[in-house]
Amino acid sequence: MRSILDHPSRYLKVKDGGQRLRTLYRQETLNFDTSRISSFALSCVVGVLQEVKKYFGKGQDPDLHGTETSFEFGYATLVVYGAQRVQEGVAQHYEIMGYLISQGLPLGSQDIVGSTALHHLVNFPVERSDLVRLLLTKGASVNQQNRYGEVPLFAAFQLKLFKSADILLEFGADLDVAEADGITPRQSFIRCGPEITAVVSKWVRRRSGEEEGSRAEKACGACGRNDVSLMNCMKCQVMRYCSAQCQRQHWPVHKTKCQPFAPANTVLLKPYFEPKGADYHMRPLDDLLRQATGLPTEPLRERETRPARIPRATAEGDSKPLIIKIQASVDPQTVEPLSGHDFLVYTKKRDLVCRIRREDNGIQYDKIAKVVKEKGVQGTKIYLAAELKSRELLSVKTSEVLEVQPF
Image (cartoon, rainbow, N blue to C red):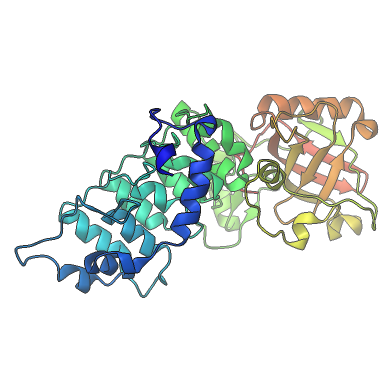
């Protein structure tokens, strides 16, 4: 590790040993031995506030600018280490972090690979978004780069910590800071799952001054309630209300934007449902992309892999209003959409899962492909209101592109 760390480059590319260092560092920190740290540091890890306070006010306060072990962990990092591993609800790591900050704890202390406490906080599968907000509120640098050139946003993306990513972006995380090999968070987020994509899309829109998209929040369009069941506007199937009263009161406002399904704003598609028993299984795009690039993947639920599904109401002859995701086929290396390939269509609940094939749809396929390319997220996916009128007919409203949804 030391020979790689001694490389003169500020940021280590793969060819400079960056990936090798990452692997060695991960292996060594997995064996982190708390018996090698001071009693004060151990109190920070264990998370008992009163024990931590005992070290102050006696004339020999701990040097909060110091570090411990050959990893050069600062005390903010040690608090984070404990917060991620000691059972939440019993420990007081949030309170300890706040107390130590009040005593002068520096938040920019970097370990041997240049990672700060904020880097460590979002580089572990246990999400502590409360601590992320605390550190940023108290002045932690949101765009500090480690020896790999990575800002904290990279790790939050890769581990799908969408709450933490949301907070990082709220505090100004830069999507265009490149790591050592030239990759930026903006280039990589599309590989990291629908929740991350939804968060990034929201902040890109806000930063550009664009209006909030339809269905940005799951709440009543009139009163804002989000703790009750919601019903759709029967005309546009997009705006939602908690009661008929709210819908009536809001109608004078909503009618100026309400876009009912009509021939001029819909594309009529013929879905293809994979036959039962077919040797075909659906896999989420981010799962395939993570697998292709060597990132860890999570076990999938049965409904996430089902190749075909038709809503019960439609199977019985009734039209079914839906919010759908249309996903283009992409190159797993470049994430570029593949022209002419099938589109995958599904809902959040996976009560509809089908494909749209060019051979079944002709010019209608070209119309929906144009919408996905021009209005979708990097030309790869889009969220729209639709009506499944029958097994043979899916009506998709293209005039109202919805806010990127977390599925």
